[in-house]
Image 1 (spheres, rainbow, N blue to C red):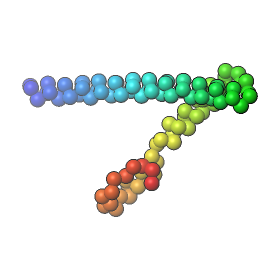
Image 2: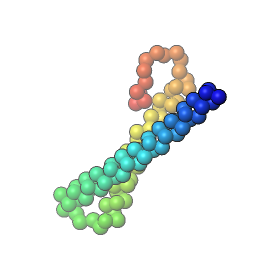
Image 3: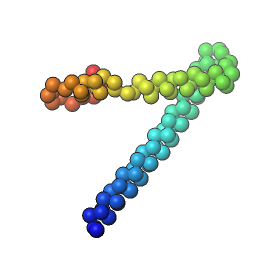
Image 4: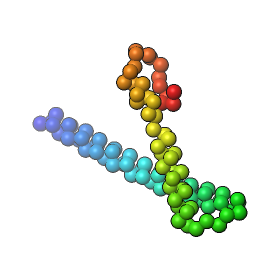
Length: 94
């Protein structure tokens, strides 16, 4: 009985941790988007352009998506499958 109760508590703790992680990542994504909108708008103003808001949002969203996709270490996932017993830690950028 106590074992199933501790298993349930671990499950609920893991669920709460996942929900909190999701909320933090969404919040960080929104903050990054707003910062990128500011940078794109300021950069366009410094270059002498006056883009409409939809083009600023489009370019900022493309930059944020590229930054998020660029952070995925695709080469590390492929090299872990073919790991030849190398004990060096992998950073994901090799």
